[in-house]
Length: 161
Image (cartoon, rainbow, N blue to C red):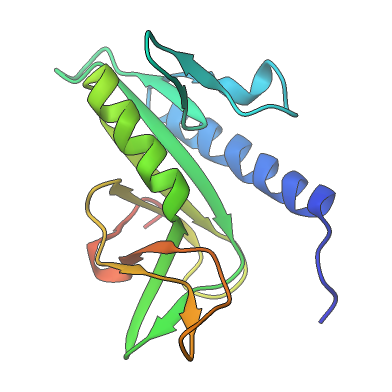
């Protein structure tokens, strides 16, 4: 299979973010897509002691007590099969960054996985902290991949049912 180049992956991710933003707007949320300001730079939250990486979308909900929260969108082609479980995930580095955002802002961070190719397809939601396992990225005791945080399909809410 041909390796996707960075520009192709970036475009797929941006398309996935736009799909999720449209979905959330249809659900009567107001959206501030942070990528709109500069596609080439990660959005940052400037704080006294650090600059924190922000999730893709800031969402405002006039109908709920938690009026403002963040959403990180991850567009995926396939699921991960591990020990008879179906999972999806994010890079551990982003997980740690978003934990800092929660601590600094006292706002929730949600993940929406936009699964596009391998079934089940659709939008799947969870809170950042509701992970099911952390993988060190090692294969046969050798570092092969980035450390990852995985979410079991059973804890994900399917938004497109």
